[in-house]
Length: 212
Image (tube, rainbow, N blue to C red; front, side, top):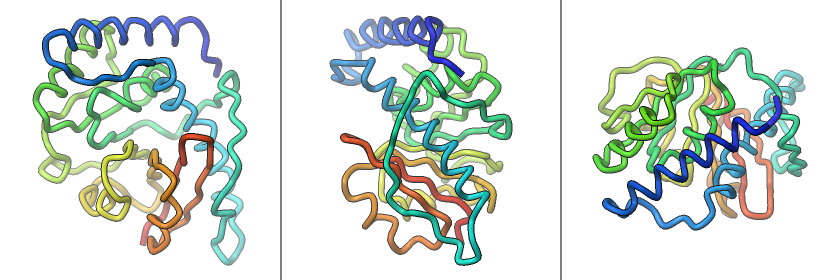
């Protein structure tokens, strides 16, 4: 799957909507939406590597915890088995809105309890005609449960706390894809799961599966 003109056209439309909304609500102060968009979708290549690695686990159930990230955004693979994604604490839509531009056959559930942020997400959904996005203006722990194939979150809280509030939304096959900083390895050290970190200059992508 290539990040061609359609993706960047949607990013430009998103940015125009954000600027318009920001003039009234002061939602976020990001200067470069392009860099945020790349950070959001760069995860997908690493997710594909994690899925492949996890399928080839040896008897010790161990992966190379810290793996180098060698991203090529022109070669993002398809994800046929990812049909439902939950994004926790969606804020202004990073990463879920940008992921929805790429994974068009996936249904994205964005949980955002802060009303002005949830309103912006609804504003973007309507103006960009994003039919694969559902906005939940509430905390995930207070919501009806369903099983997601993928759960994403960007620097919202510690991984262990996130797993706790997502109880009922995942099973042994669900994958957590977490956008973390430099303390990622310490943060997941005591989590009993199949896990792997892909490191970049400014981001650690953390993947967890089969959480015990």
